[in-house]
Length: 157
Image 1 (spheres, one colour):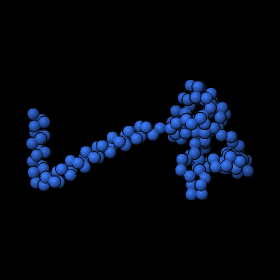
Image 2 (spheres, one colour):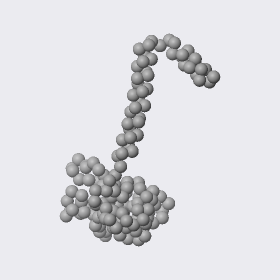
Image 3 (cartoon, one colour):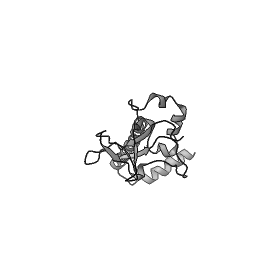
């Protein structure tokens, strides 16, 4: 009964519109729905993939893998997006430094906002993997260098 009432209500609302407009509207709605489905599928299959940069001992360690799922670490992306890196702390500039993605012989400062040492509650984020990690932005800067999304020094679990 409710379905019949709904159909009658819709028919009364569309009486004044020309047929071509109703057909175009129906096509637009169908295309929008199809686009949403395709977008959902694209997002589903656009996942990170370890291309060999993550050491096997990290992948095999449940504690390390759980660490990557912490919200503060997960904001950087996943384990498959991270790269183990060397690092040093430059006392003069009071910054962490890591090898550049473009030229590993050149060391660059890590921006303060990219350093992850605490979670949102101010608790220390331990790193049980035994490696320092860097997550690079995927698109290069205009000068060809890559920005640092996140950096987690090793040590402390």
